[in-house]
Length: 242
Length: 113
Image (cartoon, rainbow over all chains, first blue to last red; front, top):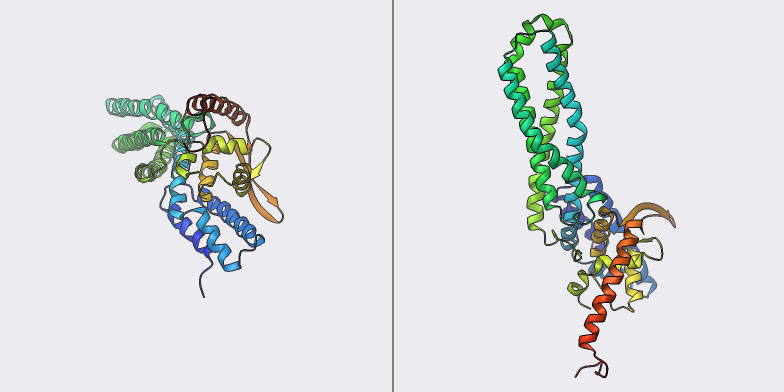
């Protein structure tokens, strides 16, 4: 018995979309929506007198090859992925930053015997990473949302910006965690060990470690978006912009 | 009409087909086909990515709704989409008038020479 052409088409479309980095929920919604369109197309063909088996075959032929349809979705899924990564940075940044600042303030107030030159050097590196990451994050969020109306068709600049932002977060978190590791003996031995300083430092480290893990994963996804865009024939505007 | 020729105008065509009210993807495909007396015939599957791009650009709004027992994703123009459609219409009229003036001057035969 031959396979239902519509079912086979949707399976092929899902497989073609699966290699494009993008939110899984968005991919499932796309397949469901196109499945609905194919169902309508088959119903129209049947109503027009087309035999049952032929209606399915004609409907999928009229929709175009699944790989072509999936390729047209690449900028859409990439923009969604880029926006997701950038929004995650935007939401976690203030929390992670506040925890580290509070931990540093408590350590200073408790006069812990930290190697302050090391702490200040780490702070300087983090400041540079932030100076690159913050504007790039804001840019990526802005151009992949409704505010980016004229640029959303081509997510390449946003993808670059998000990659820089994620790299900044990775550098910042790695430097902070390294600095903390070098100062751990002083933190644990100091008079503030029963205060909130060490506890805040542990909390900040946990937050940074979590974000670092997510950022490394995000960087890998964003690198894949760049490959997907390079391979896609549709990583460009559909209509001429004025 | 060739798909490649149409592709450059797909955004404007979709915005135009949504001017009269909300439609789902297949409804838009049919609106383009019927409205052009069958002359606009794109691979139907390519309409959907274009709609998603327009949605990300804030020109149309998409939402799932229940219709005749089936879930469908309906699209409608946003205020920004209406403004964009107005601009596309004006640009097209200007372009068409200029090309017509050169290709079909008064007194020229409309068919093959």
